[in-house]
Length: 543
Ligand code: ATP
Ligand code: MN
Image (cartoon, rainbow, N blue to C red; front, side, top):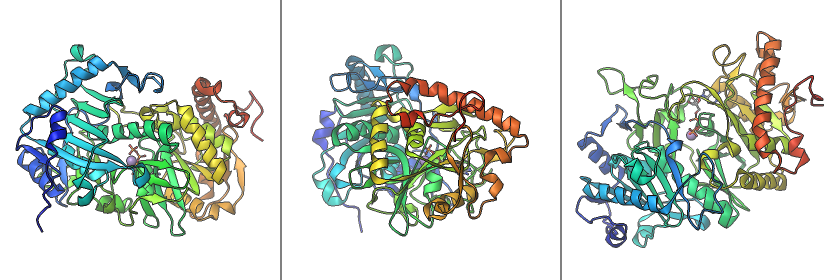
C-alpha cells in the first residue's frame, strides 16, 4: 500500500515566510525520514534497526538559552524567573526572521502535522518544521499522530520552527548566546535555533501546555508518568529528570499511559504526548526489558556509541554524554494504553533521587507533607539531562518541574492539593537514589527493590503494615514490605554510622528549610508548614 498523498499546506507555510519548493517534505512516514537521515549521513542504523544520531554540541537542554516573549499576553501572567526569561517582541522578530531566512536556504525542510493532549476536549494541533529529518522523526515519535481524515482539514494551533544549524547573532537578537529557544504566546510560535537536542522540542511544547491548561481550562498539568493497573486504577509518578518516571512507569503488569507529561481534569488524567523519551545509559535487557525492546526500526537513539567495529550499541559508553536517549512511539511499549487516558489517580508517587542517602526508599505522606514535598520538589541532580552537570548536586525544583512552569508554582500546587483531598489520593515518596551512605559511599537502591516497593503500594500490601515516622522529615516509613529486607526500609539502619546519618539528615533538613523560605509567606496552610523537617535537638521532633 502506498503512502497517502496529503497536500502540502502551502498557503500557511508561505504566511510564515517560508519559500515553497519541492525540497519541502510534508508528513513523511518514519521509514522515509530514516532514509533521508541515512542519505544525508546524519544517522547510522544499529543492529536492531533503530536509527542512531548525534545532536552535536548540545546533548541536553539548555535552560539558560530559553526565553518567553514578554508581551501583552505574558507580562502579567508569566512568573518571570531564571527559567522564564523575558525577551522583547523586537528581538523575537529578529530571531524569527533569522530562522525563516536560514530555513529557506536549507537543502530540505521537513514539515509534520501532529497534535498533543490525548483527551479530545483539550487537543491542540501542532505543526513542526525541521531543518533535519531526524528532528522531524522525533516529532513523529513523540507527539500524537493524527489520522488521515484529521489531516485533511488541519489547522495548526501552534507552530514550531527548529533550525539547529543556525548560529544567531546574539547582539542583534538580544540573547545570551548564539543559541535560543523562544516561546511566543501571542504568535503561538516556538523557535529553536542553534541546538539539535531534540528534548528542547518536547519540553517547549510541555511549557506552553503548562501555561494554557491551568490558566484557561482549570486542568492541572503535571511533569509525571502514568500507568493503569489491571483493576483500572491509575498511578502517577512525579519526579525531576533522572528520578525514574520513564523507567518505573514501564511496568509489564500495568498499562502505560505516558512517561513524562500529563493533565488532570475534573474526571480523568490524560497524556499530552504520543511517545516516550527514555534514557539509555547502562540500559540492560534484564532490568528494563520494555525500553530495551523498544530500540527497533522507527526508534531514534541519540548520542550513543557502538562497540568498535560493530553496529551494536554499547549502552555503557557515556563518552558523548551520560544523557543518551531514545525516542519511540508509545505503542513500542507492550501494554501501552491508547487513547492514553485514565481515571483520576488512586496513587501518587513522588520520585526523588536522593544522592545523600537520607530519605527512606518508600514512605507515605499525609496531605500536608504531600504539599510540602510537591512545593519543595527535591532531588539530587545527577549527571545527564542538563549541560554542565557532571556530579550530583541538591536541587529543589517546585512541582518537580520548575523549568517548564510559566505560571507561579503556587497555582499548580493549589490545584494538586485540592485534587488530592477531593479524591482521597494516597501519596508516596520514593527515593530511587542512595542507601547505606551518600553518593561515593553507599549505593543506588536496586531497581528491582524500588519496583517491588511500588508494587506493594499499588496492590495494597502496604496498607496492612505498621509505620513509624521519620525522625527529621516526618513521613511514615513502613516497617515491612514484601520482597524487601526490613533493614532497608529505615535508611538510618543502612549506614555504617548512624551518627553520620543523623548529621547528613540535618544538612538535608537545612537545605529544605532554606529553600522553603521563598514560598513560606505565600502559604497560609498550617498543615503544610507542619510538614517541614525538624532538626532533633532544635525543635520538637515529629511525634
Ligand atoms: P527525564 O525527566 O529526564 O525523562 P525520568 O524521571 O524519566 O527523567 P528515567 O529516564 O526513568 O528518569 O531515569 C532513571 C534512571 O535511573 C534510569 O537510567 C534507570 O535505569 C536508573 N535507575 C537506577 N536505579 C534505579 C531505581 N532504583 N529506580 C529508578 N531508576 C533507577
Ligand atoms: Mn523520562
